[in-house]
Amino acid sequence: MLNEDKIKQFWKDGYLIVKNVYSKNEVEAYRNFISKESKKNLGEESLNYKELEQKNLKDVLSYPELQSVILNKKLISTIRDILGDEVVYWGYSSFRWNEKPYRSFHNDAKNDFDCPFTTKYPLVRVGVYLQNHSDFSNGVKVWKGSCHTLRYGRKLLKKIFIEKGSFKYLFPQQFYKSVNAKTEVGDAIIWNLRTCHSGSAVRLKILPNVSFHPLIENFIANYFPKMMIQEEKERAVIFSTFGSESFSLENFIKDNLKHIEMKNIFKNSNFLQNEEIKKISEELNLKLKNVIS
Image (cartoon, rainbow, N blue to C red; front, side, top):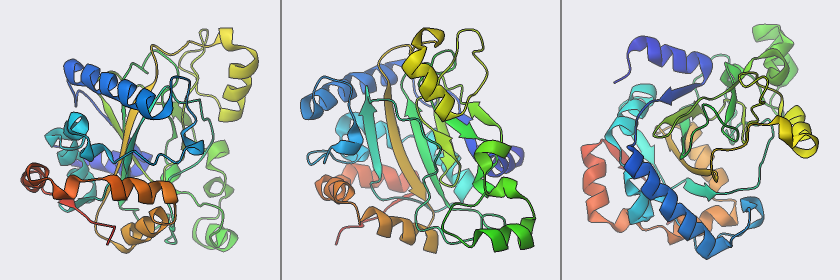
């Protein structure tokens, strides 16, 4: 259970690393399954998931081998501490194996029209990285405090000048400090969907604790790869998303349903028909939501 200071720190920084959520045996079993499933569906090479329709894939909870990733008491309890008692899961989850590096400054909020200066966005993403990124490259990079900044497309200048008066809320990648998250085997990192982040973070041999902008990281990876600390092993990661019932959640789900690959995953998923999953979810106070009528 998180104390008040930890909860306040999450909403200030926009992310939290939860230690020792999964055992080493669980992590190894997850890695083995994801490796086999990915190679069966997508092939042997480094994969660009953005170019694939993923017609055969399901959400994480619909795979018996991965159900304990979602239905984990420590994880759900931590999310409840952050979001409140009612935590919702609707099947927006996936896994990645040996994915081609994707380094780009972005956040995951969709159809978000509320002002981040005065509101808390009630959706979080969980990343379970199944290898050591405390000492190796290819983990996630986050910009601390960037969940309070604006994205393009809102009434930016008016809100900046009237409500905050600083351009750092428009360009968080330049005014906020980025951090390479030091996740270890068995950890989970939770971030607010407004939090700016980037994947496949680069750690240098001579400056392992210095975090660079993704543009610099891409340059180093392309032209000076020997300067990097390489990944510990093939990158395997499991992503899942949770929210609390709200207008923000409904807007986010509307965006999900615009994408054919997500609609396919929702249609292929069967967690809502599994009585054992429903029973455990009730015990964890986790609400399962049907988004496909």
